[in-house]
Length: 174
Image (cartoon, rainbow, N blue to C red; front, side, top):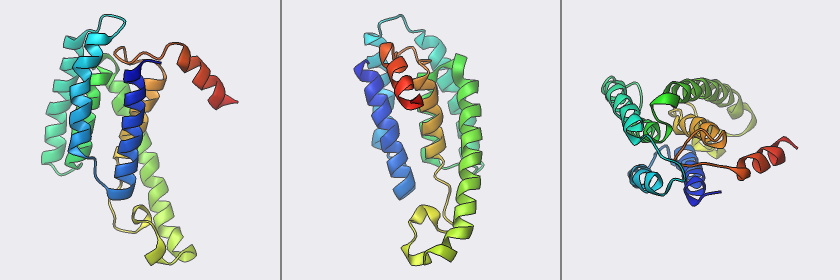
């Protein structure tokens, strides 16, 4: 498996950790993912239509700007979506958006349910912040999971999986 794919996988796990534990997606991590893209394009084993990917990035930027300005979503989440849109490209951008919207809805329902029931089981002081009432939903988890789905399906040309994908899928299904 190419090193770029491993780096993307680890980066998404780091996003999940930071957003679940601190409700933040670090700017350094989003900046790193942005800077990694041209490197991946340069070293990709197949030609990458980076102009097409850039259109997806610009479209996500325009929509993200409005979403942030309307206070619908936090800045870290919007920045992450915009940068991952570059990796996903215009062709898979709708799938990516639908995936993270659905996963975000499921995450929200699960968190609201756990936040309502957990204080009856565990004292509220001992609950992790993510399970406390009135805390935000760490939407970066859904965004990262949606990106990982596309990545693990081998649909990001700048980060091909090759043989590793079939081995990993077999191991996960067994």
